[in-house]
Amino acid sequence: MPKDTNQRTIQVLLARHCVAPWLVAALCIGLLRFLYLDVWSLWYDEALTVSDAWNGAPGRFHQASYHLIRWTVDVLGGQIDGWSLRFLPALVGFLVIPTCYWAFLPIAGSRRAGVAAALLAASSWQQYWSQTARGYTMTEWIGLLGTGIFLRGLRRANGPQTLIGLCVVGSGSFFHPHGAVVAVGMALGLGAYALDPTQRERLLVPLKWIVGGACIALVWQGPALLSAFRTYQSGGALGGLSSFLHLIKSTAFFLTPVIGVGLWIGGLHAVFAGQKHGQYLLAVVLSTSCCIAILSLFGMVSAQYLFGLHPWMLVLATWPLDSIQMPRRVRLAYVAVLLLPSLAQIGLYSTVRQGERPRWREAYDYVWNHRSEHDLVLGMQAGLGDFYLDPGFTDVRHPRTVGWNDRTQPQNFRSARRSVRPTWLVIRPAFLDLWKRGPRQELRAFLARDCRLVERFSLPMEGRDLDLVIYYKPGR
Image (tube, rainbow, N blue to C red; front, side, top):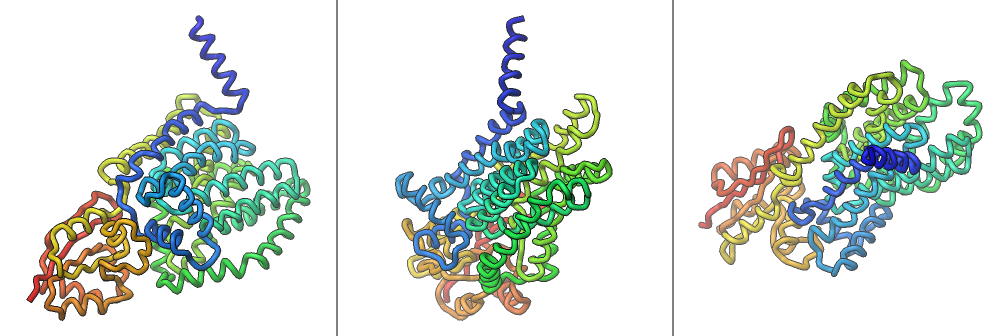
């Protein structure tokens, strides 16, 4: 009897403070964010964070995350390594979990928001960016903070509060530009309410505030966002059909088919049941996705540009839990179908998939330990080689030890082909698909005729090729 009384007391306390049991589970799972921070190799964009944070970078976007990551490294002792670079994104990635619960509580309710938080905690996609020295989790956290303010403003039909919330969401673009696209999607999604005369009348004041604010934001930040995208394009980020297909495939991979099916179940149910809050979630998901899809036609875009939309998708996937009368066992089964595959994925991520990152550190260490003093080293993502081989080196855009062997500088492997010096080449075969046909065929012929494969650093991953191979060309 005392045990039952204690259990009821805990449940009452949790209910009183709006804490769902699923949120408690989510926070426990979320502690995985801090596991193995320095075990997995950096990938090149993390090295660019080092380069731009310590040497400066043009433009206003990303700057906030660069400064915060550098400040965190300094606070943690100043040593630039995977643990210190990734600690802040991991911490913010953990904070995203309770913030997601709080943000969607006004329209989703405690159960759905709690399950969505648990799905967020168990997502290998979230784990990946929480363990990456970039600003994606910061953009997502700021977006959720603004979402919570925005949704509470909508509930009260408070124009200034809804606009402030939307501005907070948009300010996530100072950590990564896709935060602005989520804000646009939230504004466009209001059409789901505006189509209903009753809702349109109730939300007339917030709608006027948002339209006015959008005009000001377009004048104020529009040129900067356009400039950032043009800079992205100038780096070789070509758009078109291949970019659009890559966006679809990469999003499907990270979202997972199970969550994708759950998302559409929740969305279709909200439409046919006439549930305005669920319809708004669906409208935001569709609006933001369409905006990113249009951008993909002008520059290379991947799933990471939809990362800030992920919590919206998860809440939508949980929508049937409270809107359909179902036995408790059926409800738990639905949650299990959504959650268990995610837990399996995050287990694979943390073990055999080795953080889903190519093994750059091992590959460059192998070359360095087997080369002779005057051997030439060429590599894809050469700056990572210098980062690992020259402790304290930060300007990875201009490596001094490893030469570039990428699609923008094919002259380097051509010079190595003519040279009498022994040459080591670190290759990620998947990158060759991005090369122009002529140089790609030349490089493959050079590797097959003049070089020998000496080592392969494999990574078991379905749907993605993250393997690295090392070739050696003897001297003459």
